[in-house]
Length: 428
Image (cartoon, rainbow, N blue to C red; front, side, top):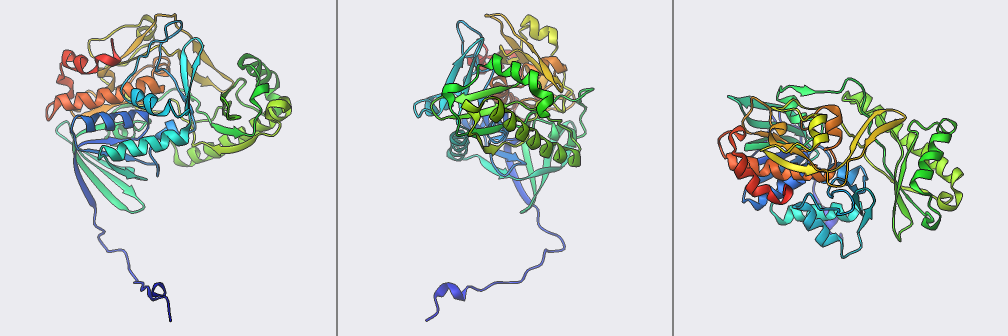
């Protein structure tokens, strides 16, 4: 007797001449689901807002998860106190992932936090689901409708059909200011390449023989030409007790041209393979059996960003200038990767803190759009010190509260005192 599944019927279909557009209405639409966008979405949902979170990747987490960065930077201040400068989403992550052994706190000049990217990715997905945030993945911006100084809707294309999102407020946390760019707003680009990185996770290592960071950097500098390495320094972040490490030893271009960007992605993996050959040969005790467990998506540091009402300057970073509308703070160094062979690394003293103002997140002529993350406005050097995950998450929370306070009015009219009262944990 035939099994019932063999009786499954199929239909022949054809795309309609006018395919329907899926339409969504929400209080807040957040484009970009990295640390800034995730923070903005979680904070907006906690404020009782109806939130839609859209990303061009088929998964949540942005570079934080999918570029295999593996390291929270800029969350804590400098030694000896290591004050926690950003709370919110990090308090939740530390509370949930710390007891399971999926975090490791590294103390040096500042404190960084290693994490298991698989565990973190699932944490984000479950947190977003629990809060009832609607998610649209694999969707890229097609068109932005701006009327009378307000973003009215954003149209997206996906493999499952076109989508239009209409919202009261929008957050551009795309990293490349894609929402602002497609809206026709002025943006900034650097005069020369600021390099990204191709991260890889290596397994089957022997961490008892791992080289010291200074020794590894010196050996790379000495041998780079011999192995065809572009970057003449590098870092290996071993996760204690697991004999795995995240390697940050490449410099890849980060073009905005679609063909060139794809070529850069392939070149990044080729660079990473040369790094592995270097490590196996030069450090056989630690890396002789090394195997690539995963290649991350290309990591992009600074590509295109918003031209906002205020451009954060290097002097404001160095002096720790505090703005009346500050939304985020960090003590992370100047870290400008504008040379293929290396980068600028300028440390700050123990008590130093610098700030990001809301006005560096606001396009001058639009009333309901806030940028968050690495596409906020700063000169190249200033931006290099605030584009790491600590302040990016704080900016996401700041964007959520600015839109909530503005309501249907202008984010430019939000009173700094009201903003400060809500964000005090990330400022004081």
